[in-house]
Amino acid sequence: MSDTPSSQAEFVRSYFAAFDSADPDQIAAHVSPDFTNDHTAALGSGCVGRDAYRERLPGFLASMPGLHYEVETLVHQGDAVAVFYTMTGRWQGEHEFEIRGAQHLALRDGLIAERTDYWDSAVFLGQVDEAAAATLRGLGIG
Image (tube, rainbow, N blue to C red; front, top):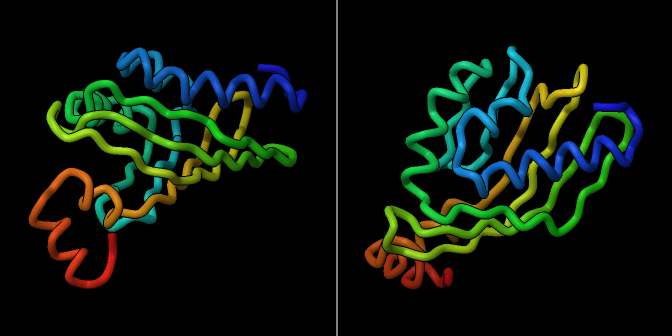
């Protein structure tokens, strides 16, 4: 990857597009060997290292058939990139969901070295679990 802003944006877009393939190797090829994957959502869990990330991807992808990230806005400054997205899929192949979120990516040596993902666990639960949706409604959410 070139270090020009347009090539960085294309590279980041290719990372998000790789999820459409459901190919763990294609997705993991975008991250550095020492990649740090962090989630701020209560239901998310992070990991460190490309190998650990790659190892987790098959289960993640299998749990969400049809997973797709629609990039809404991409902003970058130097090697920092902010991506605002809508993620859609079918949880466990049965429950369609749509979650808006954002990711902060740090690029290094042409790869994604750090990713922090920001999304709302309650929005997800309210769409895929009726008991959770009822509880959330009781709290005035959803």
